[in-house]
Length: 125
Image (cartoon, rainbow, N blue to C red; front, side):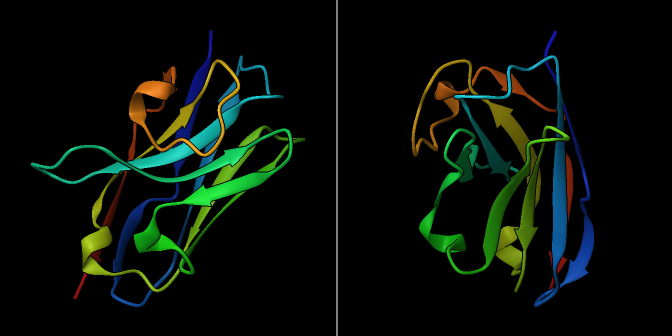
């Protein structure tokens, strides 16, 4: 049984930083991808960043490039999202997701099989 557990959300002022963590268990941590998505109230879920675990290749949505960094700790099967220079428009529930097949550079929710419960990020101006 695959479980993804997110942590690290919170409330910060604009310009601040947060680091989200996603701990995976029961997941074949190898030639798959893990990603971070977010969903604000009344909006569709959107992909933020993805990392291909085999090669550590990363891909970001344009609005977070240069501010967010996705990384992994293979030994602990944990993926991180370092978020710097946060903006009020980054406010959302952030979800960790994992694929069950080889995919690259996908920020499409339907490409991911496993999902965490989410962690709230609130950025005030």
